[in-house]
Length: 437
Image 1 (tube, one colour):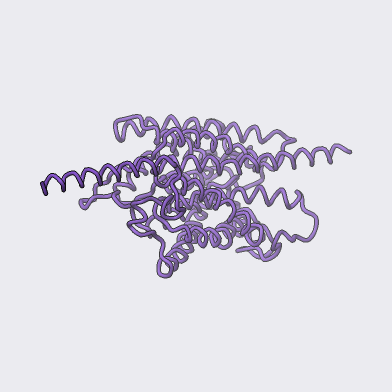
Image 2 (cartoon, rainbow, N blue to C red):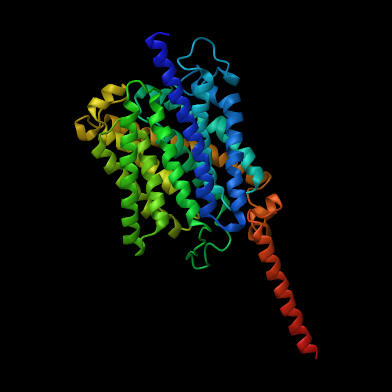
């Protein structure tokens, strides 16, 4: 075996390993979302991550990969259905499919955060399939599949726009159409805390996602032999650390306490933001990008709640707002030496590159937001008018574990609520007997 063959084999193993890391992020999302919501919905929330992954795998295999990466036009691919690609590929198509499918599954998981604790399970099936077939792949083609934004030189190394902004926008549309959870807001507009049931789960979930993100960003180098994946991992780590500290401090300034959720969301927001820029910016810029992202998510999560928007896991703040900032950040901080190395776009404004790259990044944000918001709205509005989006009030009060799946995620709940019901009945009977005697 010659040197070139060995190098190709090493690169293929690296991309496959990166795909596994990104896939394992689904476990992190399951813990994060289940822990951030109430006990009566825990099994449902965790289980839908498995459903998300299954839907993404099948739909992206059949149609999504072809629309994203198939030959076609500037808007979408029109060939390669069911991974039937003609000609020789740089990587085995199976490996590239698994890697890219892991990304779309993350985007769908983000979108579903806006549905949490009140959407019908049937809506997950329909919206999940359509998101994977006609929303995500179109944007993916524009930026990663040789489409028109790619031709303009838009920089999005690992998906601040393609993965996170799309998921965040879809989540926002869902939460607006569904409306707030029962009991979240009072008649005067003030909000009530609906705390998640297990903060340890959320911490563990974020740590798993953080580790998986090295597959996300560093894996997007699609190669190991030149060692550049290590540099991308460095900028990713520095940004995440800065986001954690900045969000914790920002949360203290906003509400007066060091909130653990703010700390965790700061990590995630910084990872979202650095995802576009990780291959284009110097380490100092990664720290700045991460810190700004963490601060933004701490502030916007409270801001949107004050405006009456009930986003249970702050999907739009963490993935949408941070996705916007991360996409713009390359227009400010893209280093000339790294732009030359990657061959994508131009240097940023702070390096004398002018307004060109920043303008392209802003254009990408605008058109992607409009497309994803419009498509998501049309799909969800259609579902709302036909099968309905939301479970009944009784089902929501009882919890989706029971109403959608027939059993609680925690078996002890049955015993607990059974005792409560028995005690209440006994007390009522005793009062009745006292009155009659």
